[in-house]
Image 1 (tube, rainbow, N blue to C red):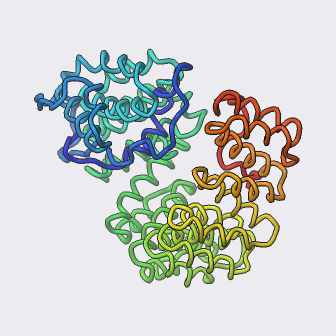
Image 2 (image 1 turned 180 degrees about the vertical axis):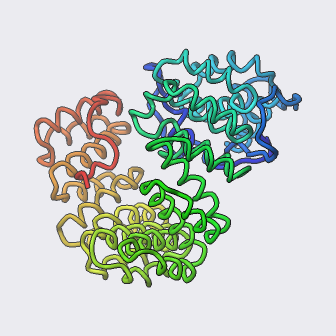
Length: 465
């Protein structure tokens, strides 16, 4: 791992090591996702995939402990210091450092834990994997981080371990994701890393796998190729014999090609069987939305009406809303597509609140009653918890869906209780916006400072779409 390189750590942490890091019952309530650093990733080294070796030479560090690194001002400084600290350790010291993580606050455990296990996975992966087996259920999350780091340097060895030890990954497979990044299986992560060094070797290994492992590995290899040269990736399709794996790989090519060159993507899609073109076009438009959402909006009508177009429109709105929520909201609402509006407006409003909460409020407040307004209101209130609590409560009370209304009102009231418990409690006990059951649940949260009934509603709180 190159200590001078910082990439996105958040997705890997939340999807991998976070299960271990947040696993202890004594862990404090997680802070906002914003507290989890999003700019560190193990740097991948080139070279030939051969045999795992011992530690690299110690590099020294500016700090003498994790706690010293975490005391520095600035998240980037902390991560860089942690990288330097772990790089200066002998692999025999990693286990002791892993045990020390249990004494850290949750967000600091997330940051330090990912960097430690990523480093351990590069330098002494078999020992790191052995340690994860002592961690109970939490070990399956950490193993994904170890395996990716191992594969980033020695993919052949990581692949052999994976195929020789299927039971090590069976439980994580039951939970989905197999310990990989962003929902990808461990096989997919290994294949992606291997493909960066030797795509032919990676494909030969992928084709030796079965079922989901094979599909994920092939898709990862083709996706990596498509990022550099979509036409080269498309040429790989003819050698893929499994129909499901081929379809997954084709979808990846369409999205990457749409992102890089829409016109070339369209020309390639036209060569596909007629019954596959609509789905590939939808994928390509989503890719185009990643790089140019306005252009994607202009081309979305090339999709037939239906679920694929609705989903693509929602994706376009979300991407467009990141940079121009006003334009995204105007386009989405003028489309007249209610399904796309319901799916996309929440993310647009959330981005809008961060840029201009007053304008976002005006937009939300003028929407007619219904499911689209419910989504907009829910997103506004949850993104504006530091704003005017009375305004937020009034908006939340206007939500027509009973479940969404109770969740949003309850969440707002609980946050209010942290600064004015007496007033919030009086409101909770008297508001008609909560059923008796919801009122009791919200009171438990308010009394516990937001840590009450943890089995209750979480997340977006939508209606299961």
